[in-house]
Image 1 (cartoon, rainbow, N blue to C red):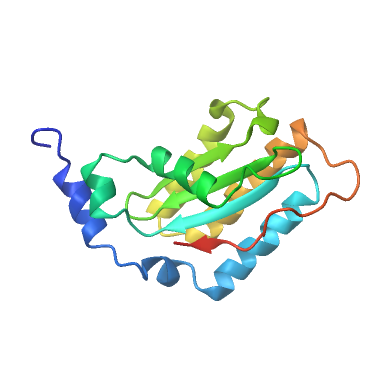
Image 2 (tube, rainbow, N blue to C red):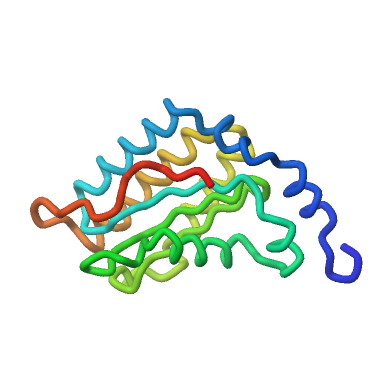
Length: 168
């Protein structure tokens, strides 16, 4: 890194095409992830969204946007916060960096970021090994376990956010 510029990161992002998310997450994998999200949401009061972004734009990179910062932007852009009980949770994967961030709305405030870190780290390890589908599904299941322990479902909850993963 020279003068605060991470050239390797720039190169990764510039060389990661927009279609890379579709290559790693084809329709059958998106279907399996959607099913896992729906299955998990039946056990707790949270609303989970999973988003994959292939790479950041040069503008984002120039401004030093981190995966966490971008996850917060996506959380807002997709209105994950817009649920009746403020119980939206975003799992964000920045593919070029192989970084996972989990952002939770204020209704899920009882779980601090340290609850999410082991889930993110396990998913990142699976991605480094090329196990994308397995990593996401295990991450969704681990997140559902955390949410069920703190926010158990007490009967049918409306599904306020789509379960279908989003590829940006």
